[in-house]
Length: 361
Image (cartoon, rainbow, N blue to C red):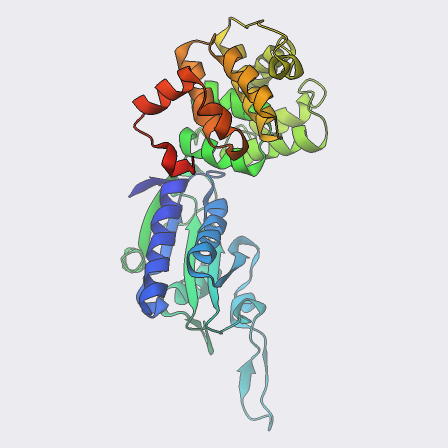
């Protein structure tokens, strides 16, 4: 089954939460195998599953992340040593099995890069996914198992999974999808230049081509790297351009550089929210950038008067962009009282089938 990251998170978190609520032993649920291209967001999705479990159950969800490509077989089974009377060999428990077995905890063992691990390591990892054991060691009853790996067709290091083993796992193919990524990016602090660029060009989110020899290419993971550079090093795309090339590749980086020039021509946010300007960009890419900046500015905290000024400014935007801004502004609780008083906003709100009561107004 092919699912986006957000769909995968919703399915797994919903299933795990249902098991916990009903008191069903977690070992009755099959281990999950996530397949997907490099950087699509499999690891990030597992952490989101843990967050949703915590929110829904009140239990502490602990993710143990095991990068199998870096492991040797002994790392999973443990180190052999003599027993007390030195007649038998016993295996010291590996750190990954040091889990809290209490009822207030849900342990999520994440076996990443399982398809890239050497066969000797895979044999031990598969024993965990199938039997929840390795040698003498067993996972606690409050443990869940998710494995992840790249497909053989991705031209990453990957070994074909035996059919007998595959038949005992629950398989999900994770795909990149721009809309669900935008929802995640908004709350994750992704730089507005990156968000607006991918809002305008959603096909640039995932540019992984298995037949390409390029080492840097665009994926959700590499876009997050670009965002971190813009947030933490410099927001000037030109100044950090070589670093961006190293993350998403030369072609995509040049597209982002050209896109960023639209930001330089935008009206001042201070003037828009003060009601001092009606200057309006004409190019679509500049309007996309403008909407992103207005919404980001509003999230920092604005007065009702400033919200009114912004809404009056937005009335002059083309409908597609205006409604996109309305959707984003509705998520900002402090300015909803201003939104409800605006005639054009109310008209859009009513046509969308929403109810102000759902928003506490």
